[in-house]
Amino acid sequence: MKIEGNGPLSPQELRAIQEKSLEILVYFKEFCQKHGLLFYFCGGCCIGAIRHKGFIPWDDDIDVFMPRKDYERLAQLWPKEADPQYAYCRSDKGHYLRSLLSAISDENTTFIKERQQDLDISHGIRLEILPLDGCPESRFARKRQILWALIYSMFNNNEAPTSKGKGAYLLGRFLLALAPTQGMRYRVWRLAEKRMSRWPITPETKHITELCARYQYMVNDYPAEAFASAKWVEFEGLSMPVPIGYDTYLRMAFGDYMQLPPEEERIPKHEAVLVDTEHSYRQYKGTYYCRK
Image 1: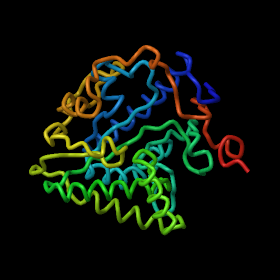
Image 2 (image 1 turned 60 degrees about the horizontal axis):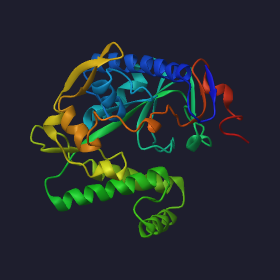
Image 3 (image 1 turned 180 degrees about the vertical axis):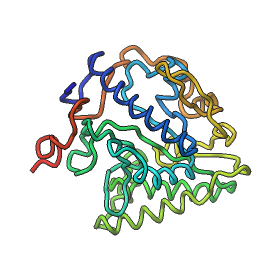
């Protein structure tokens, strides 16, 4: 199914995207189980699993958490052992994705986001992966960790912060100007990534956080026991993992997650200028992305 424009989706269009996302999820789950990697749903998928036993009816993507140790092991294992149909995507020295996250992209499909149209990257329907990190016990060290996470976000995305006021935005613009090339910015955000993830998750860890996220989530100190293991629940007729302490996590991140949003907000939307569930994004190079 080919869908042009990023307006509201019809039920048929939404379901076509969901079904492709499920195919990626099933393969990802099998890969993680084979290699002993821990993951669990987060965000809208976690809410959907608990509240709807499947996708939130107007949602079209899949996001998962992985503890940093498993997240980095996945980065090593996937390119060597996974089916090439499913590409591992993550910004590094040679790849700029304009994204803080890792993703698994179905190379036989198309999902071209507006903010990535100028990039020659994998533009398939994808599953996105967010790492979880330990929090330092010192309040001062925790503030430094958040600061490093903000620097990571800014230099990785090449964007000054827009949600912290004009002063923060101007400061961000100034700092970015000090590192004008992509290579210089890569070195800055790699340093920031190393500094912000210095606290591994161990049996002694008291709190866990998500740093590759918006500021409102970076500052959350979740109890470590909420992510100690996975709880398997129904999702679209399948068995899928959520954090063992999903209720604590969801209430801290989203408040009363069992309460439905206003009816006018229950509209299926997507972030892509083009979706094609049956054909690879490669055939659209030069027309929908990397246009001359």
